[in-house]
Image 1: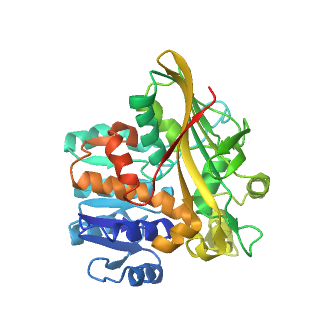
Image 2: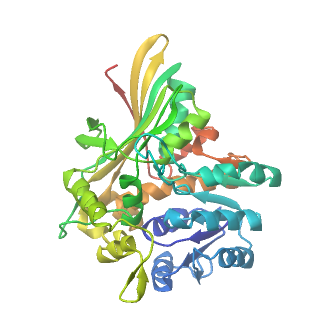
Image 3: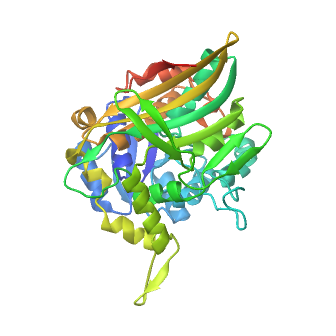
Amino acid sequence: MKVLLVGVGGVGEAIAAIAKPRMWLEQMVLADYNVKRAEEVQKKMGDQNRFPVEFIDAGNQEMIEGLARKYGVDLIMNSVDPVFNKQIFDAAYNVGATYMDMAMTLSEPHPIDPFNKPGIKLGDYQFDKARDWEKKGLLAMVGFGVEPGMADVFARYAADHLFDEIEELGIRDGANIVIEGYDFAPNFSIWTTIEECLNPPVIWEEGKGWFTTEPFSEPEVFDFPEIGPVEVVNVEHEEVLLMPRWLKTRRATFKYGLGDQFIGVLKTLHMLGLDNKEKITVKGVQVAPRDVVAACLPDPAHLGDKMSGKTCAGTWVKGKKDGKPRQVYLYQVADNKACMDAWGCQAVVVQTAFSAVIAMDLIKHEVWKGVGVLGPEAFPPDPFMEKMAEYGFPYGIREMAA
């Protein structure tokens, strides 16, 4: 398989590192706006022919198409902030390549009632083009990170094997990661984090469909394996837009453990307008405030040696099996030290990356097949979960009090 990797940040590097030992990977083009960063990752991979470096502007669709044709790639892997999704998604369609991302096209809040009604939802742009992809016989795989991605596979597995009726599919994410030497240092793209956390969260309910609520709503304490109790809150996330399309449930939610300090910082950024992704003029220069915030913070890709702790991602499922109430949490725990030792990348980006690589493996070997715009729930979950331990990411299942 030949892959054009658009974006060689922390997650992009982890994708390359995890895919490197796999014989099915013929070539992975490391394409980034920051060529020095791509060259840094290439040096770690130790193979210039298998991991060539190219400059790319992810906002330039023609450039993406040109690189895809130059290398004759089979798959375009989108590993940049989702503001560029439309261009990369459309480029893959035009060149006839399989497309994969880890976050779908961006939402836009309802112009009048944003905390009750959705406006443009995550992925709407992509799903609106699903019929075109089907007619062309092409596959676009959307939401193939850890959340969304692995968590959606877990939801499908629970529906197939563990439950007869599902009352709620709830993604729950928590961590005890500490970053030494920084008062505030996100362990993932702050651009994406701001987008997720300050947009109105989406909830899905049977008979009501998708609706929104206020950011950080419905706090609850969830007991995470190997981590312990963490307060989690509603956050906008793709799983809520994906799971109800393929799985029968009465409710779908996503809750994330952010912590009071992190929520306070995000609220302050919003209050000051520093979360704005639209460019403004500052002393004659056009700049987006959110890009300035990102530039002021340390690069998550280079924080691994300062991080300690674990991160847990998973899917909580409530329903019935054989007429009896049941609650289960399917999860994956990534330890930062283990990730640094194995791949030289910090836990959060590694955990995000591995699902994409397993998905590539399954597509390459035609275990997963399909056309159109498909989420992880559209594919049989068993082959993916069987490969998780082989790739170094074993999953767990915890029975909870019903």
